[in-house]
Image 1 (cartoon, rainbow, N blue to C red):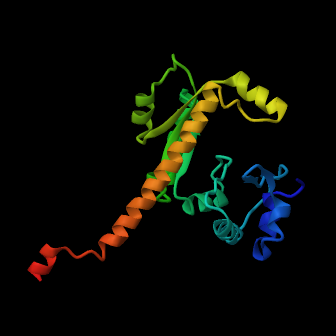
Image 2: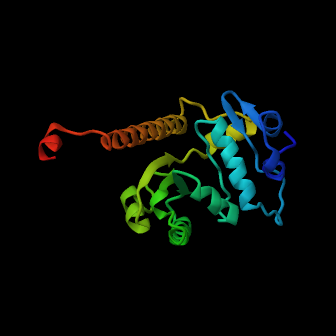
Image 3: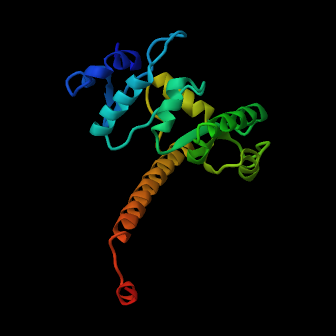
Length: 208
């Protein structure tokens, strides 16, 4: 698709159900809006981001943003509009050091509480264990993915997906289900809290 986030942002004020399908690439039930060409001078206005997100929310039940990790202004805006922020790092000193610096930065935007860590390319004899990474970063490691360098590169070469039967594929499936279960549980809790505001027990009536 020749269109990307750049064109979508430029047309954010006029985005509708006719224009949007031209911007995305559909793969089964998944709609993808790719990042576009390399453009170091690209600046996306926060108003454009908000308009795009508002449009997406009206048309999708779940939205995921794959950010660069450079913490651009529009990336911060997207994280502030998101329920959950997932930070991906590897169990190596340079990656963990950078992750800790980013967490300190995100704390200034009150985003720290939304962040969970995904530990990627983990090996049995990793320098840092799951627990040590949590202690070092001060936040929960919500999932650990195995190192499957060959499987990932073969999938990229073939323009396909990781095999669902592979170790990596199984973890992807588990993680997706865990995210869905978490969302369902959060929705149930919100509904329960809302209903509790209107529930009056017999004991309350006696006290009144």
